[in-house]
Image 1 (spheres, rainbow, N blue to C red):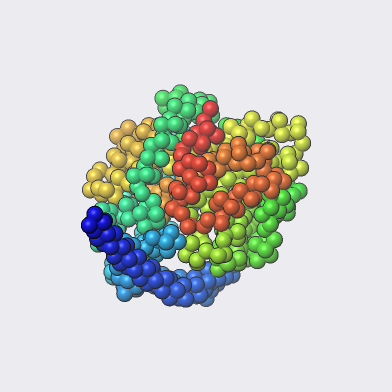
Image 2: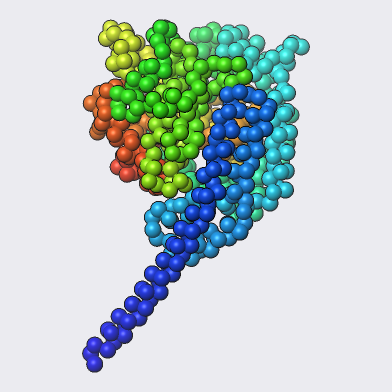
Amino acid sequence: MKNRIPLKVTAMVLTLFWSCTSKQEKTENRMKEFISNYEATVIPLYREMALASWNANITGTNEDWAKSEKASFNYAKIFTDNKNFSELKEIRDAGVVKDPLLARQLDLLYNAYLGGQVDTSLIAQQIKMETDISKKYSNFRVTIKDKQLSDNEVEGLLRNSVNSSELQIAWEGSKMIGPVVADDIIKLVKHRNTIARKIGFDNFHEMSLKLSGQDPVEVTKIFDELDSLTRNNFIRLKSEIDLYYSKRYKIPFTELHPWHYQNRYFQEAPEIYTVNFDKYFEKQDPVKLASAFYNGIGLNVDAILSKSDLYEKPGKNQHAFCTDIDRAGDVRTLDNIRPDSYWMNTILHELGHGVYSYYNDITLPFTLRDAAHSFTTEAIANMFGRLATNTQWMLKMGLIDVNESEKIADNSFKALRLQMLVFSRWAQVMYRFEKSMYENPEQDLNKLWWNMVEKYQMLTKPEGRNMPDWATKIHIALYPCYYHNYLLGEMLASQLYIYVTTNVAKNQSFVGEKAVGDYFREKIFMPGTRYYWNEMIEKATGEKLTAKYYAKQFVR
Ligand SMILES: [Zn+2]
């Protein structure tokens, strides 16, 4: 008798357990079936899209661009299928997919399909608004004394002139695009918010971050941390910058205005510390150097280089990028290499993306053979790119001798530090402005912009200025809610660099250290996107993403 109750309970538990397992098994099988159908569709279309874009970027012909556009459209169309979305939603709502790889794919695919569930007429409207704004930006020319100047010419003037009134005219002239596009941008912002609300988000900023796997609260926390770690140091360096400019323009501190900072947004540091890095690369082949370096750390890049397009050609895209054609070993980079420090940095950077893709884990499902987040692959690329002007690296690669290395070490570090700090303050402005703008597009945006600029960049608003200066930055209109990733990438680059130089590498240049390649392959590249990015970072470095190491590397 004593046993009766426990027996009954056991039976109940068993039944519950059995039905749970069976529900779990059934749902997981549904997910497996979904994935196999999905892969059969997506793998060929993804490859077609990547190849078509590669070809278009090389030939530059209208015909190839048309093919590329069509292939991108076909790929994007996959995620608009609402029957498939409902299936994913049902599987997700059941809450019983426990297998970690299936659960992770469910998350990623659910977000991808959710983003595709917007009424196509709303999307078409958005694209039309973006195209109209884009045309206004491209047609705009700064007019100075009846002469029309391109953006490059204005940047050149701001960089080189030492005449305050000329600078003021150029800077103010560059801001005249603001009133041309501001109202259109506010309409577009509200339209994007409408789209976001239709699929269950508060606003477009929240939607963009969440669909890409970022929590705005978490990102803001990291930005706050970086702000407090860099603020005092930035105040000190800002007075060094102001001293430099006050000498350059022969004016007192109090007369320094935003047009005195050598570019339209004070997003780059002045060249207070100069090292002519180009001269060390004049007689070098950046491709050979990069290939020898990666090979030396055990990440052979021959297969990538053999498929790449490395040098200038007519019609070809003049910039650089890296692309993973099939997530199965066909990885290529497009560059326009010349023997200088810029292209040394660039080829190290692009091959950083390249090894991240190439050394993925082929046993993982297609969806998980990707970077943990776009900023994590940017971090790897930045970290390797920075080596181009790292004097230890240059020494070990035989580009300079010990004397030369000692001579330029201090200035090259100071130049990088200044650049990193100036950029970090600027990225704070961009992130916080966009976030607040999407939360409330009705507020006084002109005021919001200058509040951010004064707070984070410590520039002084010209007296009485009330213009839509925020609208002059094209990213706000056309590449929305992405800028913060550049700064997250720099932060992670520092975190990884310091982790590896402390725990893995014997020297700060990584040259010849197979252990470094092994570390990155095992801890970063092979896991792909099987873990949430912050989980991957924690597994690889023992800590979640933190601003601490960026501050450690660049704040003294
Ligand atoms: Zn990159």
